[in-house]
Image 1 (cartoon, rainbow, N blue to C red):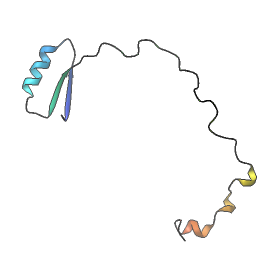
Image 2 (tube, one colour):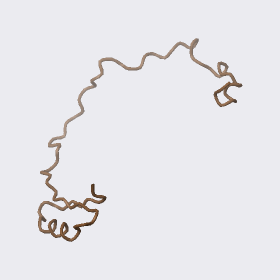
Image 3 (cartoon, rainbow, N blue to C red):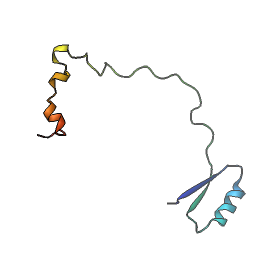
Image 4 (cartoon, rainbow, N blue to C red):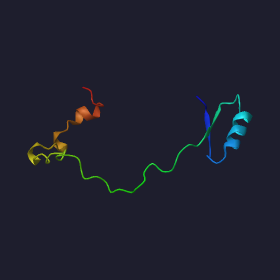
Length: 82
């Protein structure tokens, strides 16, 4: 696989051939651009949301949410190992 790629406009096939000949043996690939315009022909608004339901549930009640008091300072200070 070539290290460099040179893309030549489609209206310049002679230049493409000249560059290919001049750079033969180099780590370069010379290509003639064959694209026929933009792929997206018309601007379309985004499709409606496809998810059937919300992925995230409601927040847990405060009684089961972790707080600073729930963290063991000895465990945190040891880098996570006991």
